Length: 134
Image (cartoon, rainbow, N blue to C red; front, side, top):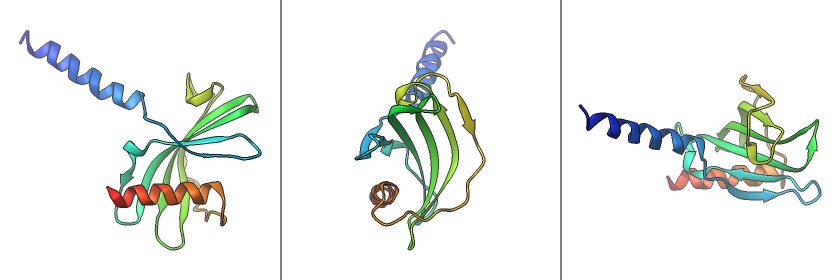
């Protein structure tokens, strides 16, 4: 029993630390706004051939309504046409979604179709391509 407790503690700390520290990869930067978009490619989940779930972190150069960053859990439909909807979002006053969220919403949004040549279309194409490789 004495050996079990330290091993269980080590296992729990490893599992929960991987949830807390995401591996964010910069995928796009807004030319005018300076907004940077990051994806955690390791946490992309595939429901079926078309439905893909992923986390997107948006980091702003300047605050909007006092907030600098947000983390959104998205569902993407990688079929034709591409579409996306937010499942939950947390907004932060600190960069890179650090600290406690200042606001959170966990209600799914309506499906949206990304405009051609937009940042979100570029991001969706990256996510769908990564999902195909999994």
